[in-house]
Length: 119
Image (spheres, rainbow, N blue to C red):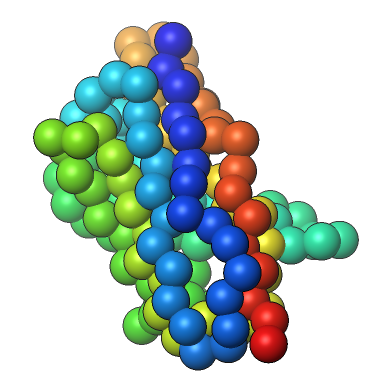
């Protein structure tokens, strides 16, 4: 069973940067899509960014040009580099892995890491 563990959240001032990490218990080469989602208080969980295992990435309009997701296959880790942070980026950030099998799709979630953007 795959496990995902996020880290790197914390308190940062507006305009600052943070890098989130998502460490997987198995090779991320087997994970078809690795995604970052976030959920702000009182709001639904939303997709922030994702990447598939041929290198293509996708970003929410609200973070384009500020956030970058990347994979380190050797470390089985996915990153989310967040720059020019805004108060509206405050949320719990979750790592997600989708694994396509022959007859089902496995959907795995991490426990989340809190990012607070405030002065």
